[in-house]
Image 1 (tube, rainbow, N blue to C red):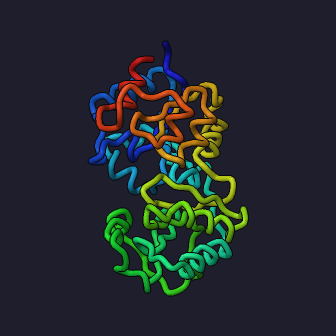
Image 2 (cartoon, one colour):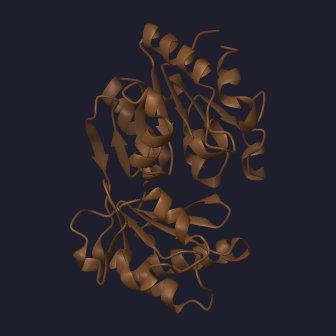
Image 3 (cartoon, one colour):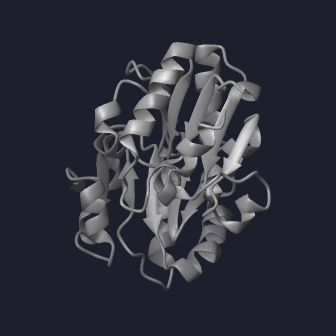
Length: 269
């Protein structure tokens, strides 16, 4: 069997093991194989570019980006193909919905642009997972008003008590009334992006750029924010450690994320 023209891979819980690491030798061999065939590898993730580049530093320049859950698409040559921003009303609605809820979020809302993360100054230090956001956005910028954010906000990052995340997402969707897309990668993590934006939309942007069809794509994922991407491509795979909803819909990888499941599945082609 031959490789598809484009391989899109979620990172956390999929390509990365539980320590955010990847088998470098196997990955390098795959990239060499794709280069020889004129193919493309895509990091398709909810993370920001800084996070992706940090964990995949030795390979930067050899893969494309569908990041922030499809809100930002960048080629391996650093050409930005798409940037989908939320408007001020959506930012205010999300902020107000969080503040009106009886439960406390596990960190303050983070408003992520193409280059930076912003948080309300009143939320500084608040929540059990606040330090996680500091690690993800080491130059986190604190503001007193959302109007201080100078660039388009691509994604709002929330983290809710896991048992309450689903009903809170329903509440957010009701408040936003279809003007934004609310998704999750599990474990209480909630992302709000522009309406009709997801990883599949990002892949379509790359497909148009490279002249590739969805039938010529392979994709791997483990969470709810991967479903649209897996439904779109010709060869979808759910990780053996994926959420039940994915395992019910898609073929499984040969192993989980801690045992090179993505790379070893690709090696069968």
